[in-house]
Image (cartoon, rainbow, N blue to C red; front, side):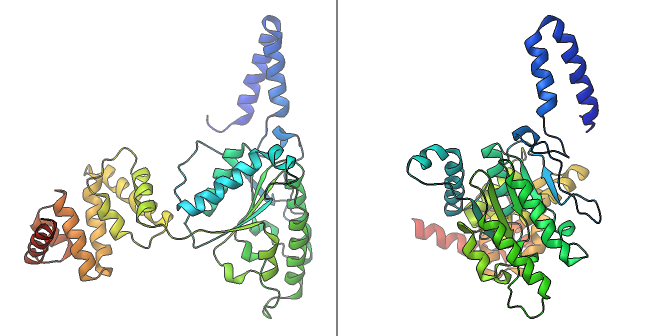
Amino acid sequence: MAGRAQDVQTLVQRMARRYQRTNASLGDSLRELLRSAPTAQTPLRGVGNAASLPLDSDSRLPLIRAEQLGPSVPLVLTPSVRAVLEQLRDEHRNTDRLARQGLTPSRTGLFTGPPGVGKTLAARWLADELKLPLLVLDLSSVMSSYLGRTGSNIRKVLDYAKSSPSVLLLDELDTVAKRRDDMAEVGELKRLVTVLLQEIDDWPASSLLLAATNHADLLDPAVWRRFDLAVKFPLPGPVELEEALLHYCGNEALRNTAFLVRILKGSSFADAERFVMTARRKAALSNEHTFDILLSMGQERMTQMNHAERLQVALDLVQDGSLSQRGASELTGVSRDTIRRKQRADQEQHA
C-alpha cells in the first residue's frame, strides 16, 4: 500500500510456500501470479510479453509510460462522441463476430479538440473497458537530441506496443506529425512523419492505437487519412457540464447547479474540475459550505458576463432559494428592481 511492490512480492512468495503444503493448487496459482503479473518495467507481461519498456539509447529513460488504471471514472461526453467510443469498444470486444463477416475492428483512432475536454480520459476508459494495458508515448523522451534517432525511438515504441494486445496513446501528436510542407521544419522531422505513417499502416487489429492533439490544423494531411476514425471532442455543453460538476462535488450537496453551469459556460472539463476542487479545499480549511465558496469565486467570473447573463444567474439563485433578492443583487451587480420586475414578468408569462 506504500507503493513497495517488492514487499508485496515477498509476502506472496511466503504465502505460496506456506500453502504448498496444505493447498497445492493455491500455492501453484500464487507462483503463477508472480511469474505473469505486470510491473512498471514490464507492463505487458500479464498479456504474454515479458519484455521491459523500450529505453532511449542516449538517456536510458523509458520511451513510454504504462499507466496504472485505477477505479473506473465516469466518462462525461456528448452523446455523439460517446456513441463512437462505445462502438470502438464493442468492435474490439467482438472480434469473432466481425471476423465471420470478413471484417476487423478499427485499429486506429485520432482524438482532436481543445485541452481538458476528455481525450486522454477517453483513452483510459477504453483501456479499462477492454482490460488492456494503457501505454502512453512520452514525447519528451522520444524526441532525441540526435534527430536521426527519433525515428528509431518511435519504431521501438510502436513495435513494443504491437507485440501484445494493448492500447497505445500518442499524446500531442502534432509534436511529431507536423505538416511536411512546413518550411520551418528541418528535413529530419519530415522524414519522421514518414516513419510514423508507415508504422500506423502496419498496426495490428489485436491492439488499439490512439492519438490525441490539441492542434489538429498542424497535422500533416496524410496523417488524417491513416486513421480509421477521427473523433472531435468539443467543449462541454450545459448538460455535460452539469453531469461533470455533480461528480466533481462528490458528497457535497449543491443548492444550485444551474448557477455553476452558467458561470462556467465555455470552460473545459479540466477547468470546471479545477474550479470546484479549489472551492472544496477552501471550504475544508475555513469550515464554510462549499456552495458559499463557489458563490464568491463565481462573482469574479461574472465580471466577464453581460447584463442579461448576470440577470439570469440572479433569477436562478432567487427562484430556488439559494439567495434573497438582496443577496443576488449584491453578488451579480443587477439591481433588485430589475430582478423583481423580471420575476414578475416571468410569473405573468407562465400564468
